[in-house]
Length: 317
Image (cartoon, rainbow, N blue to C red; front, side, top):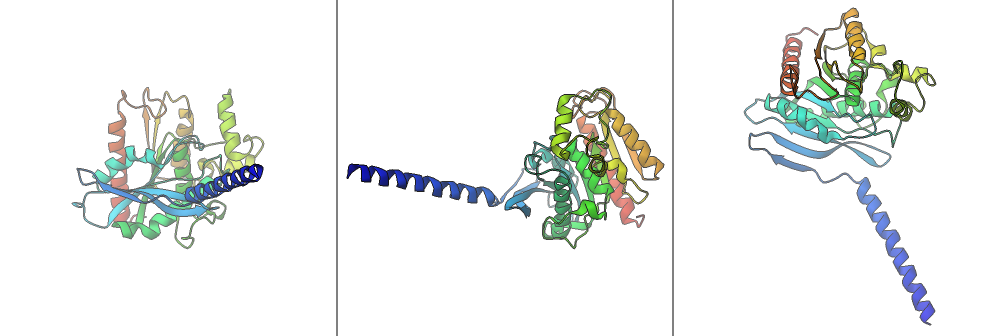
């Protein structure tokens, strides 16, 4: 009799554990509760808004809205985070979107599937879904959907460049999200030290660089040359591309500055409007004691977006 009671108790414990596990899984798959607050200077932040869902997992966006003194509709900038396509999240966008919001822009910082969940082109498909969602829903946040700037750092800059330069290419669009009839094109790009040619490994690449590219592409560029070319922004350049600003430090040991130099030249050769800032002694995301420094560079980014937005609004597009 005691053995039956013990067996029943164990069964109940196991059943309770299984139900708890199912509940946890369900909660993890559900989108987090949307958070919103206002900063003392009037900037408003809305976090954890779902823009798409893939295989039951939500893709989220944080929205940074300017103070109410700026008249609507406000221009839009989308930020894509870095982290070697395997780490990081949308929270990293605050460093760039808060100054943009204070300058009158509505900022959207988007997540995408990392390489532990999916290989390329999933990351690009997610980002394009994010752009489509922003364009379809911008008016709900007092923003103008017609002109959209995009920026990102490192791996995020790589994805931002792909979004900007591959507009309308079927192989890059994907079918993520519910706004498939909305355009994923953007009207200006700021590339912060992004790898723009994944076919390039340099003369003596580090093992970690090979590992990261293998995770992203499912093989080294020499093993998957067509996919590596598709994943390289430089292969998508044409005269119809939007204006580009490139920012890169000449002491970057993670993403070689030579990539941005060649990227700049290729854009200029294709008659794309392009500006290039090479920061002396600037490292990878390290512009603290440089001239220009991080604050200066963010200001130059905002001024670039301002110029290109006004130029576009004047009918030059």
